[in-house]
Image (cartoon, rainbow, N blue to C red; front, side):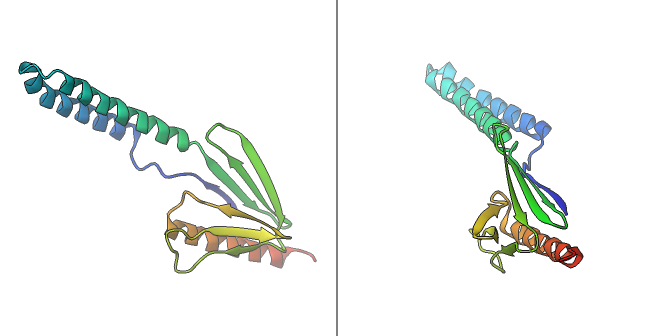
Length: 152
């Protein structure tokens, strides 16, 4: 198994641009009558709304750079995490002793917990509950296959 887990970004860059342009046009349409009667601060606040939306999308893009790389080999489960700043952290578990646990059916706060030798870690925090369950089942299958192929 070789899996890459990334946060979902449901709106494409083109869709984001269209949304920001639409909010800008709407803000302009709403602001013009207020400017005409001398209530100019309304236009400024409409501009702040657009800036806030732009900033939120930039933050979302930054968080979307995080990733988890999961590899199951015959002898080990290797996990590499890359955070939003590009820093990498690695963990390794022996595949023969590693166990995966998750609530089934999944709850909103259910977690994929990988444990072995008194250590544990959580995978896929940013996935939806159903996606976490599907990943947990696939990871369990991959570990079971690795155990069957282990010469121990």
